[in-house]
Structure formats: C-alpha cells, structure tokens
Length: 225
Ligand SMILES: C[S@@+](CC[C@H](N)C(=O)[O-])C[C@H]1O[C@@H](n2cnc3c(N)ncnc32)[C@H](O)[C@@H]1O
Image (tube, rainbow, N blue to C red):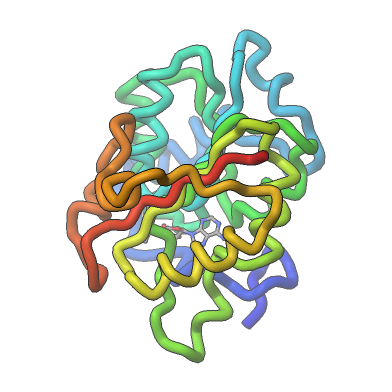
C-alpha cells in the first residue's frame, strides 16, 4: 500500500474520522496556515529565530505531548507532523487556547517533513506510541524501519536524542533490534527501570492512558553518537 505523500508504505490508519466541530473546522482555515511548516526544503531556525533548539514529534495525535513540551520549553521550536485531520484539528484547538507560539505543524506524513529538513537540524525526536500494526502482514507499515532510522540519524545532531515508546511488546523488540543495528545510535538504558518507567520529562496523552496495547509501556531512548 502506497501513501498519498510519498512512495513508502502508509503507516497511519486513516486521515479522517467524524465530521469536525465548527470551531475546529474554522481553525483549519484560520490558524493552520499560520502555523504550517513549508512544504519544501527549509531551515527550521528561520521559523523562530530565538529558538535555541529544534524538536520534532512524529504522529502527535491530538498534540497533548507536543503542546505540553512547548509550554515547558519556550526556548525550543517544536515541530510536529500528523496526517489524521481530527487529531490535527484538536491540536489546533489546544494551541489556540494555550497560546503557544513555538509550535509549527505539518498536516501530513512526518517522513515528508523529515525529507525537507537539513542534516543535523534537530536536538530531539519523539516517536510516541506509533500505530503498532501487530498483524504479520501489516508489519511493513510500521514507522520504525531502516529508512526512518537513517533519516533520524541524518537529522539529529551528535548528542541529540530520539525517544520511542510503545505498549506493544513485539513493536518494542522490533524497534530495539533495528536501532541496535544502527551504528549512529546508542541505547541509553543502564537499568531495567530506564525502559520500564516513563522518563521524568514525559507528558502522558489521553491515547497513551487508554493502554490499548498488550504490555505496559516500554520506553527506549537513543542518543545520536
Ligand atoms: C496511536 S497514535 C498515538 C498518538 C500520540 N503519539 C500519542 O501518544 O497520543 C499514532 C499516531 O501517529 C500518526 N501517524 C502514523 N503514521 C504517521 C506518519 N507517517 N507521519 C505522521 N504521523 C503518523 C497517526 O495518524 C496517529 O495519530
């Protein structure tokens, strides 16, 4: 199956759910263009010249984590990508309420946004509870694969960090196996609690709290060497 934005397998379930509430539909017309990342190669620092760091969240869902981190880190520019319009519009509504100015959004596939960013432009990259695709015939749709890991390695600065979380045991094994094969990344865990417990700076989302997977969440943090 080919995604609409590129020739890679589609990693998300759907682009649209229920009809949007009027405020959210309005925000798609008014706020979204003002916060949109360019759809061509660009330097993220041009979007917020004061920003000391640039972070990216892949598949931010309704944006609770993205906006929460933006609030805690006003000196960082937070980029996020999400193709599901209902989540994207919910994020806009939260953003309007929170009045956060250090967030920029791509309504679409994160792999397109990553392709437009320059090498070594990110300090942090978050992949939190990505669609698990547990059935064998669907595993090729998982976001974490060799090409994604190579792009993440290109974008993260040395010392930059990628955080992955899932509550599907097989997806945790799958991802760890692939990251451990990538010489650009070092798994930072030193004790079991490092992958069993949410990191201190994590912000839980409503999706995560539903615990839809088959295990308690597993947290994998990798450093770009
Ligand atoms: C299971 S949800 C988790 C949402 C959020 N990270 C959270 O923890 O609440 C996974 C999200 O990733 C999005 N997604 C899947 N593939 C994506 C891709 N290639 N680019 C951007 N987002 C993607 C889906 O649309 C979905 O909203």
